Image (cartoon, rainbow, N blue to C red; front, side, top):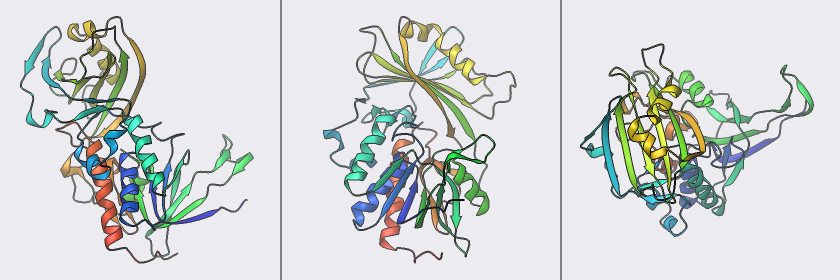
Length: 356
């Protein structure tokens, strides 16, 4: 069996989303001499990034004050909010709750925002490695987290090394930042190992679907933000829709279903399809076409379900810890803020060297 390569850093960050990249940027801003590595399982930064996404700008303004000079290609200022209750054939407009009013926010593509953050991190000297998934946690003799092992390449279906086998490298660091997003594989293991959810409310989850549509010319209303509750879900099932109008007659349309639903006949994707055939939605989409689509799980438990975020040698940041603000239906600004804040105590009060 081939020996594993070993790389050593001050900080290794697992996950190249907004939390992980914000953490990397802030670390280098505070102490340029730190060696920082970001491991991203996607083939490129943004390849696995999926969100609504309406973003509050303050955390990004603080992290990268000049980001607006070269914004993502999709970056549309919010202009109008609408909140409605949908029935099978009707739509009843309701006052938008205060936390869902989006004046000052922007509609962005998370898949475009993360490469922007990645470029800023690399410019500061961060090593960013897309296409490398952290498969296993490395522990020190004292039981503290001491790094991660990258997954092996060239493994056959039976689990045995094939002709192109290459063992994954060990990436060791005195601090590991877990920014894997919702239900990250390593995060789940460490939450169990260190009992980080002890005394907390159980985490709950939702499943969110999202499509990018190209509409016929003249139908889009750039900056318009719509949310609905109600049909096709019953009153006992958590969920709702979003429609975000972009420029160039494009819209994001999505639907979220709480995974604690009780009706065994409910199929979340079918509910999304039903919603798109509602009279008020069908007339918007008719004649348009789907450009891209995806789905992701959402940590919906809120503040009371947050696990303890620190453990010996490691921290949970962003959605790995469940920092989504559910009433606002927003998480990007929380992830950026969480990642940036997590960097500060490491630099101000660095931990002792790890015990190998």
